[in-house]
Image 1: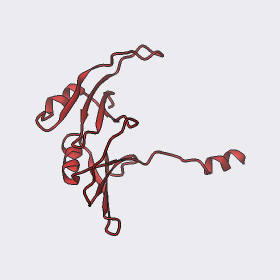
Image 2: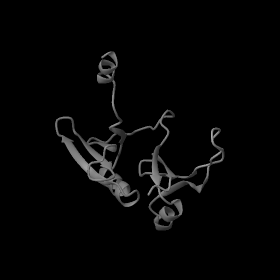
Image 3: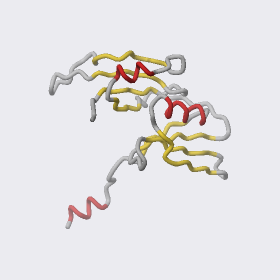
Image 4: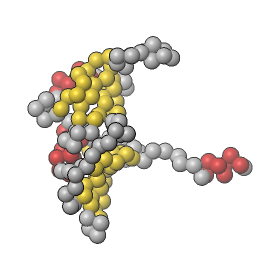
Length: 145
């Protein structure tokens, strides 16, 4: 009984992460064209003067990325506490072979991590790019089928 009550008061899953964007259409195009996401839903808040666009994978994406666009121009600073968004890819080589490098900033070319995992000695194959607002995106090769 006590365990059931405790579980009823705890969060159960991650819904989304949010980033603020300065050009909504440019950001949507990037996440669709470069990363293969689709717009899951859009919410406009006229009184608050902002729009939320939720991007994700699949028809009913359980976990999404919320793009927050404030209608009145604002300047944003990333700060040093935010790291990056991590996405799984089946093949880094495949992803980069179709990438239009004139439209994407590559921060780190594909390759194994510099350090191995202490527990299993594995070095994941990773790469980093950035979105139009400079948010870092880590691509991790997981070979998911």
